[in-house]
Length: 283
Image (cartoon, rainbow, N blue to C red; front, side, top):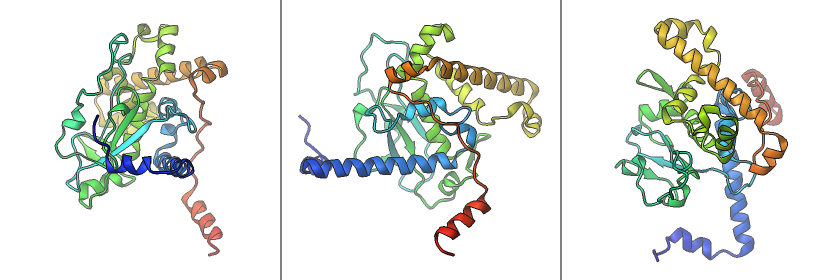
């Protein structure tokens, strides 16, 4: 049996009441973290937004034990890594439901030499449909500062931000959930098979611009064929999410332990928010 880490020994030393308090603080921290992520996303990408349902399913609800385990890693201040986020699909999501997932299988992320996981060492059981990993920009270099900003970091013609990476990986987990995979099988969508990685990324990328059909800047920035493909993918993805939402009846929500998120509100006018904060602070 492997020797326990210092952190594991410390956890085992806690009394039942202390462990409950620790678990509650972790839960609260997770909620605060996800609340900040959601606030920084455009409305259509939030849990209750037009394209947010898969990421909401991927995150889980309440204190459900199926809640996604989001593991953070850094490069020790050496800039952005080649992999900004990762999710390891379940065997069923890979189209191989009869095979057993091997937790010893090394991922591309683990093979990346500059990666340093924050906190406790990565839990191998938090793979194969259970956990996601995301890069945390804690360095003071220009690339990491840009990635942490609202505007994000441009790479290969695409704009990346840390909240979008979190939403991206949670979406992969949602599209790998038992509820979504059963939906595909029961309805015959995608011939009843799990979505391929290329199709999933095509759908997720198409949701970057919620109004792609009327975005004139995007229209002129891309060639005609690419624009048509993007518009078509977004329409497919919108329809797919709509059908999945209708399929998730209250009975099915209870069966799978999922909850439909409330519609996302439009972002508050910053000037109004500033006035509210000033009022609360007595300024």
